[in-house]
Length: 403
Image (cartoon, rainbow, N blue to C red; front, side, top):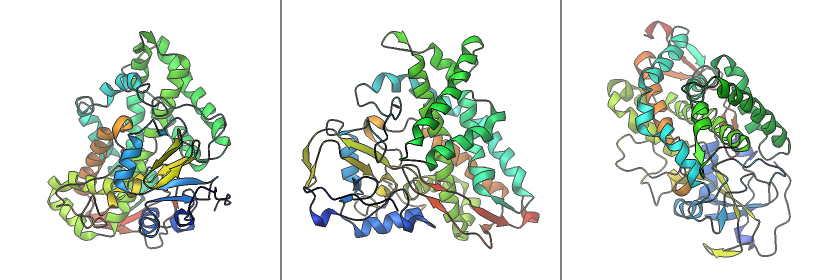
C-alpha cells in the first residue's frame, strides 16, 4: 500500500478509513467484492490517508450530485495524487460549459444510429475471435477475447492500423499500470506523439474514420489545433482500449461460476441485454476523481479547496437504496440504477457502443461455446485504480461440444 499522509485537522476521526484504491491488499482476487465490503464498513464519505490523502464517496446519490456540480467539484484534475504536468484530456478534463462544444463534435460518431451501422462488422469481429478459440476447449478470455474484440472495433472506428494492435494495447495497459505516478506524463507524451503521426497521415490521405472526421471538425468557428487533436485522440485511445475489455472480463468471470445463468442465456438469448446491464451494474471498471474547486460544506463534511475526491462509481450499483437485493445478479430485475458510465455533463459518450459490443459478444459466445468454467489452476489477479482490471481469465469447456 502507498504510504499514509497526515490527517488534516478539519477532518473528524470518524471520517477516516484506511483505503488504497490502487493497491489495497483486498483487491488481489476480487476487486468488486473488496469495494462492496469497504462500502459496508466505511462511512458514505470518508477520508483515506493513502496516495497523498483524499476523500472517497460510495453512495449513489452523493456521487451523482458531485459529478453534476463542477462549481464545487471540478474535473480539471483527475489523478490521485495530482501528477505535475499531467495532460488535459479533452473533453473530460473540461468543466461545463467548456466541454460542450467538444462533446457535440464527438456525439454523432457514438450515437446509436452510427453504431448500428457497424452491426455486421461488430458481429463479424465477435465471430472471428470466438471461432479462433472454440475448438481449443480453453482460452485466456482477457488476452484472446475481451481485449481483442472491443479494441479491434475501436481501432477501426478511430482509424488506427489493426496490424499495430499489440503495440497499442500494450501502451494502454502500461499507462493504467502506472496510474498516479509521475512517469505517466512521459508515457502520455509518447502515446500522443504516436497518435499525431497517424493524424498527419490522414491529413494527406483521409479515410472514413474518426481521425479524418476530427480533421474536418470545427470548434468556436475554427479547426481543432494539434494540441486539441492530440488530447482528444489520447482520451479516446484510453477509453477505447481498456474499459470495455475490463467490464467483459469481470462479468465473464462471474458467469463462469454460474452454469444456471449460462443455460438461461443459451436457451433465452433475448435475455442477453439484461445480462449486459447486470454486468455493468455489478462489475463496472471505472472510478472517477474530482478536485475540490472551493471550500464547501456538503454531506456533513468540510471539503477544502485543492483536496482530491474519488467517486467509487464501481460500487454505485450495489447501493441498497437504489437497487433491491443489490449484490444478486438478477436477469428479471425491472429497473437498474448504476453509474458505470457516470452521469450528467460527463456521461460517457461511448456508453451505447459499450453496451452494443458487449451484447454482440455475449450473443456469439453463448451460441458457440458450451458450458464453461474457470480453469483448474486459475488464480485471479486484479488491478485497482481509476480503471480496474482483471489481468487474466482462464476458461475451459469441452471442445467437441463447441460449434
